[in-house]
Amino acid sequence: MLSKAQLKTYRSLQQKKFRDQLGLFLAEGPKCVDELHSAFRLEALITEEEVGRTAIEQLSSLRTPQGVIGVFHKPEPSEIGNRKSKIENLTLALDGIQDPGNLGTIIRTCDWFGVREIFCSLDTADCYSPKVVQATMGALARVRIHYVDLPAWLQSQIENRKSKIEIFGTLLDGRNMYDELSTIDYRLSTNSIIVMGNEGNGISSAVRSLITHPLFIPSYPPGEPTSESLNVAIATAIVLAEFRRPH
Image (cartoon, rainbow, N blue to C red; front, side, top):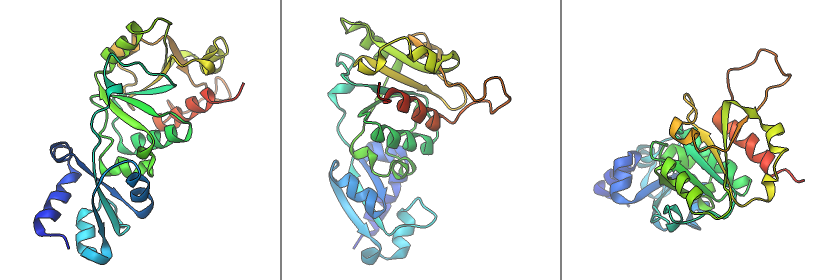
């Protein structure tokens, strides 16, 4: 049974400052908890049968709690996040993504398309918040998230390589994605980073200056009135699908 002190501690994990202080985060639902158990150290497994509905509702961030909550230890920072380390595969960089649902969906999408490393600017939403963890549906077990000074990290990737690194970024004033990608053999390159920007403001000027291939996802049919822009999670899926398309 949970003591009142334990319940209070685990409830505090709804807030980032306590997740950071305690090095713990919450995951909810049998499938999500089971997936994460393979990659993160389990602190506590809490079920409705053991603690009752009231305690589960106090810990849950869902309108309809699923009855199973896992308390996990956050991983130690990886050396791959160090500026001197070099990425070896297609990598995603996120510049100021704020919406937890978008971040969770992006992580899940990266899992589907085999992107195993995501580098986030320091102002990107916390990947261990309950809403993000829930939206990933367990993908956090296979996709590693790193929080870095993004402009400095991108610059270090440029400087630490003998061969040219390709940095792609989605911009409203970018070049037609399909035309741009047809001119380079991007699929065989291990030197590729894709940058996705903030929901409202897009990619910051500091990061934008480092982009070698500005991409725009064209609407259809060309020239017809349409929405101002795509949701960033959907745009990420479209770009990754194109990068993973067979020759």
